[in-house]
Image 1 (tube, protein in one colour):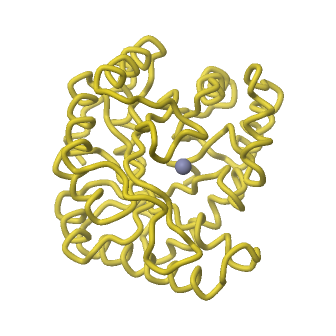
Image 2 (spheres, protein in one colour; image 1 turned 90 degrees about the vertical axis):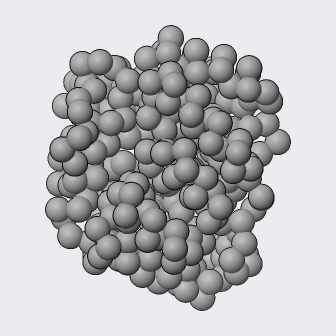
Length: 293
Ligand SMILES: [Zn+2]
């Protein structure tokens, strides 16, 4: 099985500013093609991008067919102004702004909505996120509006409250997932909400010297235990690397992530991918019933 349920074509795993700069005028087709070729050479047939504000993932989707890759994109991720996401997404201040962004996604044939609802892990301290994130009510409202427009929703979700708000609103996938508590893990399992833990974003930093290795190692272990717990309780875990994030190389990271997810049987990862294939598209020819899953 070769797929990645969470990657960023626009990023290069090294320097996000430089990487985005390469595409700022227009998407650099040669670079996109060379990445698609790398994926094809590894036998990858399915990719779900997290989107970007410069049209790179959109161009990648247009080209991907030539490489026999089924490519899904939210076009751009959506964040609330003043919160995490401005480096890669498009922001809204009011719900009317948000509705206008959803209209743009329809125009561009987005496959789904990607929402940023919380910050990042602060690796310099234990158990800390970089910001408080959106309120539960707001998260529910945003997901419900996206559902009302026929979109499935991929949620950048760190923090226990964010996961619960995302599940209250029946969001389709939780990405990353730091600091989930035991009851929340059980809820993820019982509701079979897809969790894509992107462990490469933690594990691949070990030894890079940017953050204390003990903190990274402890966090990786904890996340691996939580992921295993969800799977043991019947939950759905997806293989997504966050390729393009710092120290997460395109293509290669799929085997890194598989290694970090070594307690998860292939069958669960495959079911998760089938679910994404069925659910994360608003294009009618791709949308099929996910009822069987
Ligand atoms: Zn990402």
